[in-house]
Image (cartoon, rainbow, N blue to C red; front, top):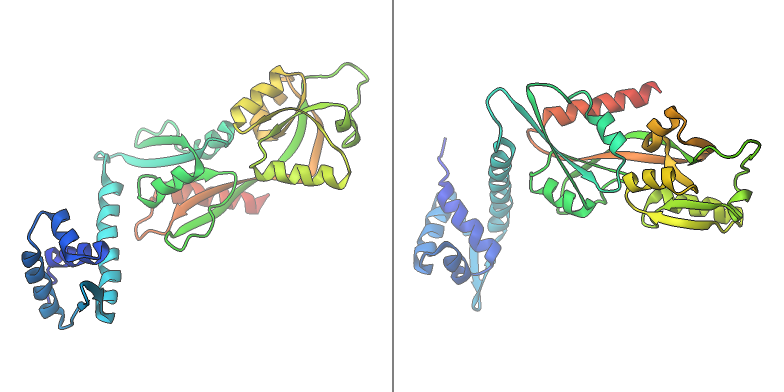
Length: 297
């Protein structure tokens, strides 16, 4: 089996990505003539010309473009290996989870509960903006991202979206005075309500539902963070539009009551992963378990 010189391949890859022999030489802190020798050795080994000079620029040949695709896969796999194994201690399994800041903490705990307390598992949980979390997932710094919506298709990334749960949505509030019956949707015309931020899919669906009924609600507050939405439901005295899981403890204790169940609306919960040769099996197990639970509902 012929042996590929990966040192030469890395030099070729950097020249191709920099688009210039001189820029690549500065990046690598070597002379352009030394780089030329390395590339020539790789071309001799492959039996193909990888670059052609057009004026003062270097352009990839057809063979060069093919070699660049393979080189990118090789070095991406190496980066994935380093990131996947970094921090992994003998006898311990590591799962790195990203959670969108708008996601219910109760849902996160429910998703991770099978792993919580296991002596052989270490959990690292990052909360942040969805876009930032996807960047970390793409660079193999996270194993799974949890969010209220899927990742948009991206030609430069291999994201996989899995719908892992759907939760009913309700209008909740503190227990009203006896005999105070809430009529949905007409009473929203004169009853203050706390709503998720306008960027959320739940808010968009709610606005569309009220618009079809020609109801303009009195908005007491708009809140992006589900933890704050939960607190506003408890403290404001207004109605709050929430997935039931967000306030499940308050509903069970009687601190909050369900005033109207909106069967037409559902809050979706997604797990975003990336196609990998060796995916994190803990993430795969959790996602598989949730998918199985959904099928049985």
